Structures are given as structure tokens and as C-alpha cells.
View 1: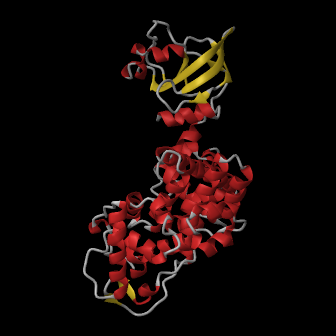
View 2: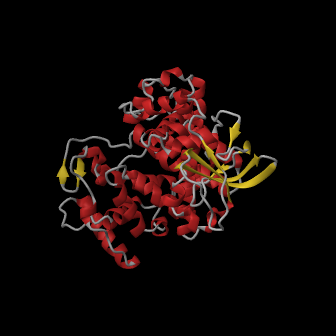
View 3: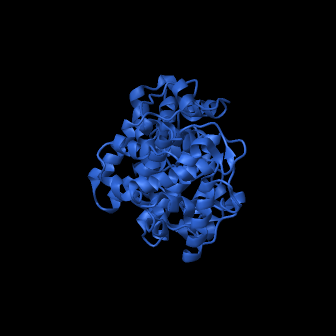
Length: 422
């Protein structure tokens, strides 16, 4: 038995009535209260009736009554507001700091044991997804309902982080967007390095050279620490000359070249290639974000993201190292990841900050227009029979796995709750 299961019984009123306290007084649950995720009692603002007296206050839950003392609640005035102690097994009377005896409800024998048996079978299933063998018993309608909730949670987490980042940048929305977009261009392997690059090369400097692609690339490669050698090729030699002048003008200090990873990567993902594509996006968009909120269709943004490296990179992957000629355009799947992980969350936040609900709705509709991601998590949930039709659904199952399934939070999951009740 664990406290999470007690919370589940309480939240969904899975307790057999009539109810009595351990000293045999009739108990009625009028309002179970609100779950407290911070320190203090487990449920706040509950309303109960014991005998003829109605009480409004907080509820604390433990496996055993004596846990009250094990957790030292008797020394904490925050627990003076507790009006009911809910336990699996009653083994001791408990008192508050003010020496008030707290009524106790013992749950042992007061719920359907099959609920707990089902819960244990989920926890001990050994499957990568605890309910993997049973999830097909839940309707697609129920799954879609829960996926919508998961997407809302995921987007809210991203939005809150973006708003915090904007606040930390003294309200500079454009600079924050630039930094996070740069991070996204590094994808997994070079995300930290790309974000560091954006932090040592402020957008306001790049905007002064937004009409000159050579200078944009010189600033980006130079600040990345990738222009330290003597080059025979004209292109990197020109970039180095430009950078040395601009670095002195703006008092720039480059990153150490060691922050960039090239090993065990496909050459098309090399940071040298991604930096040129990032420069192309800056150049073509005229400064990144300002055009995006007014775009009507998601295809307009994917067209904007269809950027190609400068000519030198057609037959190079690194400076001075020639390769077979090939045009290197940002791939569709990469563009979709940038859309999903950076652009759409920022458009959603922009709509919220500007009090434009229609813009927030547009951001959500864009997610529905994008094909689902093709990754290990999405493929797993497709095999389990989840209806994953678009990027909103694929983002939702990623959130579901990382925040519920991996943590075995079956009792907080609507799908898990349905399976338990079967």
C-alpha cells in the first residue's frame, strides 16, 4: 500500500459508505478539497460533517496514524488546520501542535480490493508501458480526450518557461526567441553550443548586418570559434577577415571550438552546415520572428524554413575539406521539429502576452496541420493502438510517457483510472 493509492481513493470517492471515524462518529464527505502540491496538508479547503458538526479545513493522509509523529506534524503549526486524518491503518491517536485530537478515518476494508490488485498489476507488469497489455480496452475517444489534456499540459509548461526566459532577458521577446531558435538548430547534440553562440552574439548585432549574408556568416562562424585557422579557400579566408574587423568593432569574444561536436554525426548535421542554414534563415526572414505571427498557414512557415547553405557548403562539410557536391537544404523533418518545439510555442505565448486568443488558437491549429513526429516514443504508442494523427497527438504522447508512464503515475492518468475501474 502507498499514499498515492489513498489519494486516488479520496479524489474519486472510491470509499464505501456509510463512513465512521475511528471513535465511531458518523462522517459525511461534503467536499474533498483541493490537492496540495506544496508543503503542508495533502488536501486543502475540505468540507466534512462529523455527527452534527460541519468542519471546513484540511485533510492529511498517511498509511498509518503513527506516521503523523514520524513526520513530526505535531510540532508544525501548519497542521493545526487539519480537520480529518485519513489513514489506511489506525494504530495511534494523534494531536496537533495545539494539543487538539484529530478525528481519524481508517480506509482498511472500506474500498474494493480489486482496485488495489489492478493497481499492483500495473506497477509490476514489467512492460515498457505499465498498461501496455490492457490499454486496448480503453476507447479511442477516451484516449483522444486524455491526449488533449496532455498537449495542454505540455504547451503550458513550454509557455511558462518561455515567459520566464523573457522575464530574465528584461522583456526582450525577440532576443529570447533568437536564443531558443538557435538552440533548436543544434538539435540534441549541439543544442547547448548553439545557445551559447546566441548568448555571445546578441541579435541586435546581427540585425545591423541582416542584409549582408557574408557578414552574418562571418559573425556566426567567428563567434562559434570556427575561424581560428589560416585558410587557403577564398570563402573561409573572407569570413575570417570580415570577422576580425567586426569582432574588434563590437568587442566580441568567441566560444572555444571544443564546445562543438562533430563525432558520430551525419555530416549533414555538422554544426558548420547548421550555422550556414541558420544564417540563411536570419537573412531570408529579415530578423526572424516579426513576420511569423501574421502568417496564416503553416505552409508559409515551412517555406520560410526551407533554407539552403551558402554555395561553399555544396562541396564541403568542414572548412578546407572538399566533399561530393550536394545541395544542403534544411530537411522537412528538421523544419517540423523547429516548428513544433520553438516557433509554435512562441507564437502561442506572443498571442497570450498580446491578449490575442485568435493567435493562440492559430498556433494550436498549426500543430494539428503538421504530421506526427516519427520517433521511438511515437512508434511505441502507435503499436499500443493510440490514435496519433498529427503533431499535437505526437507531442501529447511524448508528454504522457515522460511525465506519467515513466513515473508510473497511473493513478493520475485518465487511461490508468479507466483500467483500474474495469
